[in-house]
Amino acid sequence: MAHIHYPRLTHLALHVRDLDACLRFYHDFCGMKETHRRQSGPQTIVWLAEPGRERDFVFVLMNGGEDLHLGERDYRHFGFALQSRAAVDALAERAGQAGCLLWPPRNEPFPVGYYCGVKDPNGNQVEFSFGQPLGPAAGPSPAQTQSQSQ
Image 1 (cartoon, helix red, strand yellow):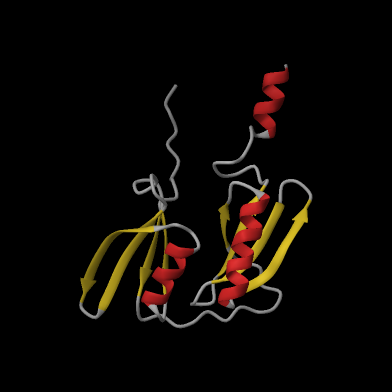
Image 2 (cartoon, rainbow, N blue to C red):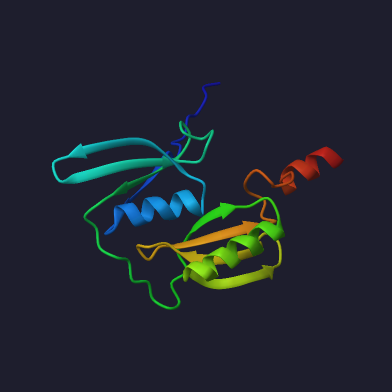
């Protein structure tokens, strides 16, 4: 039987107005590190990755974009997992002090968990969560739990 190879998500590209402010945000709030930078005429292109995931998934930030203005009910966002509820609280506190907290920590039923929202300098919404079945602090998936109990 032949193996089916599906596409794999490797990067997300953002065209931003203030490249330096966005680089600082994703470094300071998300722990992302610059892994690549190049110039193409007036365009600066920077790759950011979480430590240890440099070959797995990157944000590509490019200068020359416009600020994003999302509607009040537009919930599109990037999601980052944190290791605890206390880490969500601490990040929300820092974001509040920095003036970029969108919504304070709240708890929702599984699979949403405990989370807060922050706005990056370009207007993108970023969620920081604990308790979702995603990320390094996630427990086994419901399918794994079910197969282990059989």
